[in-house]
Length: 324
Image 1 (cartoon, one colour):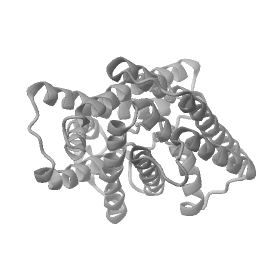
Image 2 (cartoon, one colour):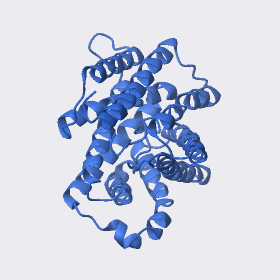
Image 3 (cartoon, one colour):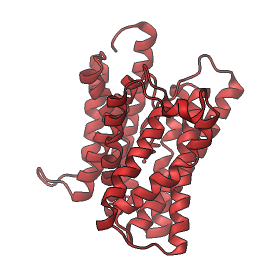
């Protein structure tokens, strides 16, 4: 399962984290009504595809090592990106040309780390609970933006940030100062993912979104391939097909999400991204008979409300030129 911000990244659900290769789309100015509707459809379709990816990860993770699942997610997820890159300005070679190689490659190293944490949390936690923790990514990004990008945050957004972290505590229900392994991995993955998105915002001043996406996949493939000799179970043909579905669904979901946010404003599209929670809850119930506890829904309500309010205040601050 994001993330979902200037250039705006989609809220973290698709969060669900559309790793690796989540890119920050440019948002169209003053879109027409039909264009916004198309944007909504793209975001909803992306959310459904992320749901397919997330359920596939959880299913495969019960049989195969998480690094192996992440490797195939990256390999098959790269396939939808290559034709898009080839049709862009300068073709595939142009998309692979880096203006900031140290930054691009350094950021790309975060992808396998985030994937391992997030995918493992899908295996260890009920799917809806893991996805809900991932919703905290926009809140974490708001904090990181202050320290890494020098963004101004007023007291209202700080209040929303604190409320959002309170929602996370409702979901993870720490026992004293300890967390379950699954919750700790979900939080760690969300932090790493958020850091990669904020870093990507800085890099996109000179490098394109497709460049970041391609190298995120390529570096993840190289890093995870290096550990496969110690993390390999030969897949059956049906499971290999499911791995292909997992990766291709995630790759197309990231593209659809990017396209959606090019067609409409974040304030309109953001709430649709949070459909990932009911999709995950339905998948968890249908496949694993998981029923989210009341604390998950209460925590999700606080996290989602805080995230949407932060986006709203950021848009107001951008329009008014001040921290809000």
